[in-house]
Structure formats: C-alpha cells, structure tokens
Length: 157
Image (cartoon, rainbow, N blue to C red):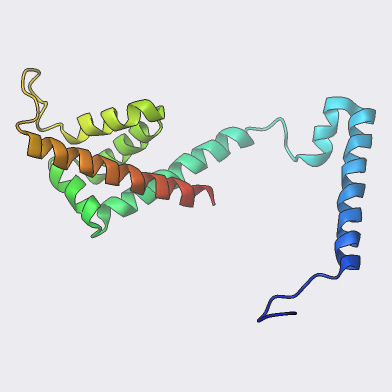
C-alpha cells in the first residue's frame, strides 16, 4: 500500500541501480589494478594541489562565522556569555570558543570554564567566590558546549 507521497521502488529499478553501482566498483577495482595509487588522479581533480588546506580553512571559517552569529544573537546563552566577558570583543570571544572547542573532549569543559571565569581568576590566589557562582558557571559551560556542538553539526552538513 502506498501512503502519501511515498513511492515504493520497483524491484527492477533497485536491481538496475545496484548493477550501476556494481559496475562502478568494478571499474574502480580495474583502474586500481592497472594504475595502482595513480588511479586517484582519475577520480580526484587536482589531487596534488592545496585543496585539503583550503577545505580545512573553509570549514574552520564557517564554524567561526556560526559562533560569531550566535554570540550576536539574543539567545540567552549568548547574552550570558557576553555579560560574563563584557570587556572582550565578540570576535575574540568566538575565536577562543572555537579554539577551546577543538580541545580534546576531556579538556574542553575546564578550558571553557576557565575562559568564562576570567573575571574571577584574574588574580592567581582568588577562586570563584561562592558555590552558587560555581554552579551557574558550570551550567553556562554545559549549555554553551551543547550550542557549540549543534553549530559544529550544522557546519558539517
């Protein structure tokens, strides 16, 4: 039974598509056997160029742009981050957030917490003044990490 706009694919169509994919795989295998690693040149344009570096820079810039856009928004998390770091420009905050987000997962929370607590830890001997501020800061870091993770996912799609 066909419901709504869904359409079942006829077995012949699926089989034909499978045969096309199978033939492409066989061709790749033949080229690999004939040309070895040089077969990559057949499938990848400008394989020796700097496409990897450009792609990586573009990905980083896209994420940074998303973070800047987020920080300029009225999202309550962005507002709290801006309040917490009132003396820092948005681009500087975004660059630091991008940097700390790239840390290994086990270090991210501490890096972000230390960054956001900057006004509390300016003096080496002074720690966060009370447990309430500590909990608020931890909550902000957790929510900020969640937002950065969402942005990172958008950046990859």
